[in-house]
Length: 177
Image (tube, rainbow, N blue to C red; front, side, top):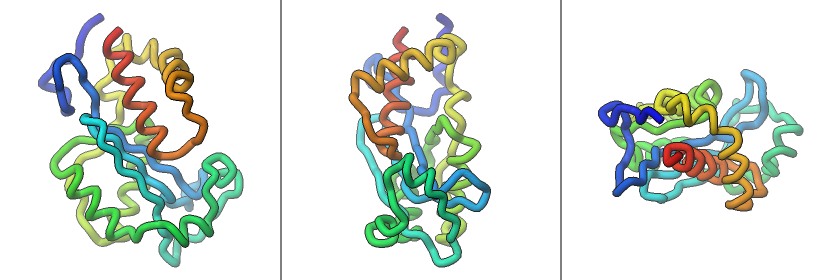
C-alpha cells in the first residue's frame, strides 16, 4: 500500500494513529431548499461537538422522509437547537485554521457555509472532501470497513456525531490496512 505524503495530510499524528478531524451535517431535507438541523464534529484527539441547529425564520423547507431518517422533528430543533451565531463561534474557536474533512462535501460544505452566512460570521477553518486524503487502497476497502465499523460500534441512529465518528474510525482502520 502506498502511504499518502505526510506533508499533504492536515491532521493530527499521535504515535501511529492518524485521524482527521471529521464533520457531518444532517439537514431538513434533500432539496436545494433544505437547511442544516444538526452538526457533529470529531477531532483527531477524540473530542466531540454536536448540536441541534435552531432554524431561522426563513428556513422553512421540511421533508418528512428526512425527519424519519434522522429521528429529529422540527419541534425538537426549534425547542433545543442552538442559534446559528453561537454555533459559528463555537466551530471557529474549535477548528481555527484547521482543515476538517467530510465524506459528503457536496452537501455538507454548503450547509456549513449556510450557517456562517446566516450568522454573518466569517468561517475561520477549511472544509475539504475526505477523498482528498484517501489512498486508492483506502477507497477500495472503504465500504467493507465502514460496515465492520458500524457493527463494532453498534451505531443505531443516523445522527451527525455518530456519522462523524464512524467516518473517522473507518478512515483510521483503512489507513492501518
